[in-house]
Length: 183
Image (cartoon, rainbow, N blue to C red):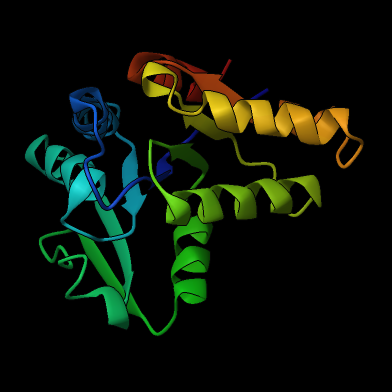
């Protein structure tokens, strides 16, 4: 039986990406979290998909919890109109605070930072350090190469089949929210 998800950590790009559907998915997710009564926990930036998910959540009346390291305040345009705005000294602290304040993780399209965050929580799950849901929001197949890489790692004997079960792949925001609801 799944537990109630009240707070969702969203990892995503600090850029919009090449497809308009990435931006639409970020905005839809922000609104959906607000409408579903779930708090958005994210990297506190006001640029790219990060800014889009947060602005949509705020506009829909949602609860927001942003975490940003000092060195990114200017680059990621720290979004200060959040319910909670935390400034950390390092990226490591940022990731820890974000994860510890969430019941689940959703990964929208993003770059190296999103991949770093994804692999860290996946590794922690593999090591038995948490059992929080991890969802890849596979907008227009964006994460297909990552899913293939995970399958390759399993096929080549560097992880057990169980690692694939730690990640839920969904194609839409609606499917993501359905996956987070208690059974």
